[in-house]
Amino acid sequence: MAGFDKLKLNKQLIKSATEAGYAVPKEIQQKTLTRIIGGQDIIAIAPEGFGKTTAYILGTLNRFNYSPEGVPKVLILVPEKEDVLAVIEQFELLNKNNSIAIVGLYVTPGTEAQMDALADGADIVVATPDRARAIYLKLALNLNKMELLIIDDADRMIKKGMQLPITELANSIGKCQHLVFTDVMHSRIEKLVAPFMNLPAIIEVEALEESPVKTHQQLLYNVPNFPTKVNLLNLFMYDEEVFTKAVVFVNKQATAEKVFQSLNRRIQDAVGYFKPRFFDVKGFNTVADFKAEADARVLIVVTENEDAIELDGIPFLIHFDLPADKETYIQRVTNNNTNSEDETLALTFATDLDLSLVKRIEQATGKKMQPAALPDDLVIVNDVKPKATPTKQSTKTTEPETGAAFHEKKASNNKNYNFSSGQKAKMNMKKKHG
Image (tube, rainbow, N blue to C red):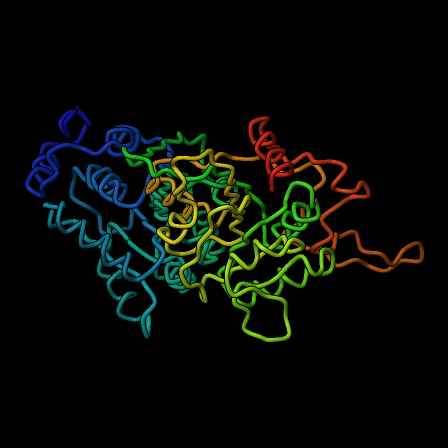
């Protein structure tokens, strides 16, 4: 494995990395540092703890082989105050050039102290996007000589809705190098960076546990939003021949009620709650009770209320929501029937914002979830719903109703769920012997 001396770093940085305990560069550092030093735009994808921050800090410090001017040349955007402080601490660990001025910008009462620090001279600015934008608008953050823009933890910042300040800052900077670091890549990140990145190299590092957990077969349905999740669940559950019994996991009681109401309009008594909070709704106190009732096909389980639950013998385990604790998910999908043929499918519905959770689960289980194409008959709800303007010709809107999961063709007559032949064979067995 190549050492830091093979990555075009200056001798002082190599010495600093060695003294800090970094004897050998991690994979993401090996794959990105020469590109960073070479001036290329990159998008680096790797799990947390794999050395992304150290990679861009070394690449940044390598630029300063001269006396800094005290004018910001590097802007690093991170999600929160704690991240700003952690990045600055890592700079202090590796930086031996005391003439480099590093200033942190984050939300705190008043902006005067941070504006004064910038006025005293700053070569590297580490900031949350909202505070950097606010100070830029006060004309206190000079972006005119910026050479490098780094967006760290891009997926977390999109979850926090920080796209607007990131975009405004990027657009306010002239030509420069752009580096994006993220745990996972998805369409929202692509949309964010497309206007300002120049043919970036996409570098991905993955690591799965060497001893995989024995799980049921897992399928991943990547959907754009919550309403499309509801439509997909309706589309599946409407087919009573295939989906004979399913446990549907949601995180919150409010979500459970929305899912119940949507399903209840179509399959009525076939859907119930696990340990319902109210006496006047259909429910089951045990999974065994649910399995014993022939007409019951959907059991909604709320993670926040969940006790220990026995899931053996359920044909479909559907994660409408992914739990925040990956161990909860792993416990549910672990296949404990090692002596019999596994006939259970674990289906996960995930938006782009859920994909970082998916990555962490895959890393922990040592298995990738198999991506599944969305059914042809699924109604996909647009994220932005334009308001219809009534006209003389028509007053109808063109947006599909949430839960209206089908086109005119009946779903049970068009079982195009993108299951493999092996999966369909399992389903047929369930129909015959369920």
